[in-house]
Amino acid sequence: MARSDPSNGTWTARSAGNFRCIETGLSGNPENLYHSPNSGNTSGIPAEQLTRLIGDNCGGDVTGKSYGVVSPEVLKAYDGLCFLKAIIAGTLPQAPLCKVLGFHLTEAETGRVAFEAVPKYRHYNPIGIVHGGFAATLLDSALGCAVVSTLSKGENSTTLELKINLVRPITKDTGPVRAEGRIVHRGRSVATSEGDVKDRTGKLYAHATTTCMIFPAKGC
Image 1: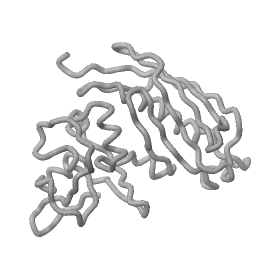
Image 2: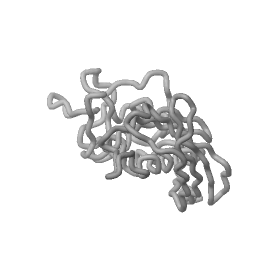
Image 3: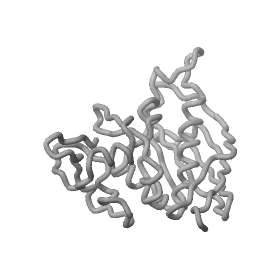
Image 4: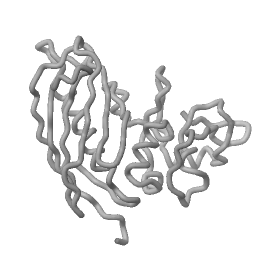
């Protein structure tokens, strides 16, 4: 994650590889807003400005992934697909809830998004299987982000409805699972998507549909 350097008052940052998003009006490239330390100061953005833009509730873990919430200014600097790809690249943080439940955004293209997770004992309900909310959270994230992947710069979205079917129990012995969300309809103000949770063999554990509201860019 990005950290302040007391010697020059800036946050250390590095490039996110070959991935390039859009131009912004911020002081510095959005690619350099959230990075690991000890990689050279390339952003030139003062620490206090980055703290304000990204927030000071960011944190990392032993996997090297970072977690946090971006400010509206940073969010508006990306279209939906660039925003998701920046999270995957580590340029922007994964959501704090990802750290809590142990799932992560791993794939994104226009109209299709995937999250991956490993169910564990800590996800269990009192009767000895993984709580249904685990699959529901994976699907809510994947289906909602499938809609996000279609957003233009300045647009936003929120979930209106989520319908989920749990067809098999998930346990700590299930192994890694993958939730994929796919866009079904993208209208001007409403979008729908569908998706499923499967294990590495392709066995289905849950499937769902969602409806999201689209908020146009301000001034449009």
